[in-house]
Image (tube, rainbow, N blue to C red):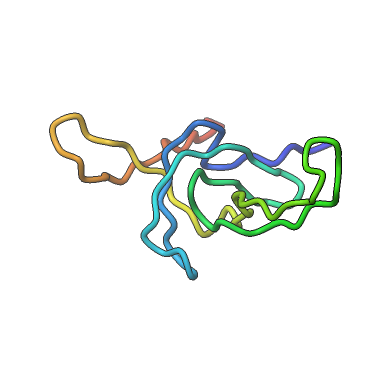
Amino acid sequence: MSRNRFHVKKGDNVQVITGNHKGSTGKVLQVFPTKEQVLIEGVRMIKKHTKKSQDNPQGAIIQREGPIHISNVKKVEEAEATSKATKTKSKSKKKAS
């Protein structure tokens, strides 16, 4: 049984590098490993129609984040001195034979 490992995890700051939301940055709210998608705070806001319920007797149209494929985002670190985002590199682990 193999487990998918990704370059981002919940709570990381990321930047969208391709697609309609290119250049947007935000914090990862949730990762969906089976679909290889992530939810990013404030990026790809979609409108969802909800049925009538006790909370919303008239029904409602709510806005929430939509998923983005994990390959379309890169992890960034906020530099303390500047507000500019910087790239990060992950260290590759090589096996010694």
